[in-house]
Image (cartoon, rainbow, N blue to C red; front, side):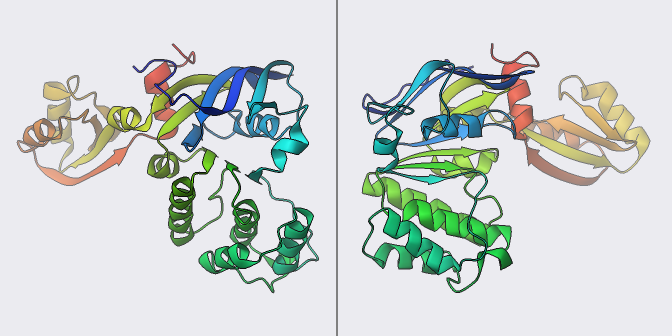
Length: 309
């Protein structure tokens, strides 16, 4: 089990300390504390409803905290929100765009409001995400609206990017292009805070990750540590029910076996894949597949039902 705070670079661009907003009935965020270093791509990982969006809205200065503080560029996120917002790109979890506008006209309007004269970066992003700027927003799919939001966030080449569920609605090709873009932005020197409920998305581009569950920070870890602790499971379908029962009797406890059908088991590998394969070689196997832990299973494995340990 890693420590509550992983080792981090010294220059913090984002500083969150004891941040709390209690909406009642267990909803909200409670005593959150973490830092994001300048030039870092930092993942904020949690299931839907865990508190990611509430945290992002605090960082944008949309919400006044009940307790604690959130600071960006050394400034208070609520009191100095205008100065902060002028230096960052933001992608909200729910994108609100004028339905009657064409995508290109909307992007021009936002660029004009921000004082962004050059269209070069905007045009590059439109091409990268294969966005049709002539399309009216009301006729767009969720994925195309997400592309508009991404272009808005990145087109000013901001110093900081706050991205809430950035690949929602995107197909795998566009997801891959988004990851490439984040890596390029980091090379440029930008800082990125990326919230997601999808482990693979965070895994591919973040060096550190904060786990949030039920509004509370569970842990901040280096991504290499998280990858090493993620468990794999084998789904095994035996040729006959008696073969399944025999394996359960002889090896069930050692393999943390769970029965998923009359002839089917799920077995924990825990890094000892060769041992497990040798055990299975003594039985008649009809089918074998593997899967990684889901995000929720990771939380259960790390912290148990009661939350952080």
